[in-house]
Amino acid sequence: MELNTVIFDMDGLLIDSEPLWNEAADEVFARYGKRLTPEEYASSTGLRTSEFVAWWMKDYQFTQTQLDEVATEIIRNVIEKVRTKGKAMPGVGHIIDFFHRREFKIGLATSSPQALVDVVLDILQIRPYIQAIATAEFLEYGKPHPQVYLNCARQLDVSPLGCLCFEDSFNGMIAVKAARMKCVIVPVPAHSKDPRWSAADLKLSSLQNFGDLHIKLL
Image 1 (cartoon, one colour):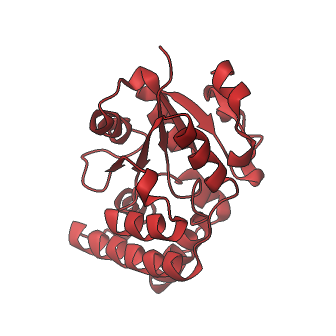
Image 2 (cartoon, helix red, strand yellow):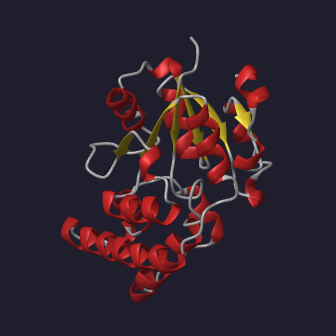
């Protein structure tokens, strides 16, 4: 089926927010004597904050209310950090313009809450180009479950088979493939040689490198 739609992840792909998420979590977790390594952060990239907190705080025997409070504090913290320090990832302007000129439908599928999405769209100044926004904030399952991508395709009134998705995380890549969509992975340089990226349809070092040849290959 011919590709006619592109769906983007957000954190770590369009906005350089993953380090800010780590900072926010470090500051909140420090109150409980919890410290994650870079490898631990990398393993849980793409999860919703509630799932991230539940996983890494599982030994603390917190109630669900307490876990929710920790997650809310991290989200509040990261929104402020992104608002003051958030920067576009290389190639964002290029990739949005590339698909806009080719009259692709353009969507966003993210694990982040709508409050952060609104901040990022304003920072990047791409809101006029995004025709559908799907967040996993209130879904029963987040990434790597495909529901957020399927919801975005449904909002755009397109078949999943006509969708090309851009991701930067393993959990996101699995969500895309489970939705039966094409996946372009743009990992951080430190993890670019991870053999798991072989499950993607294409791996790039930057959004800036995507072009017409890649569309033909996909």
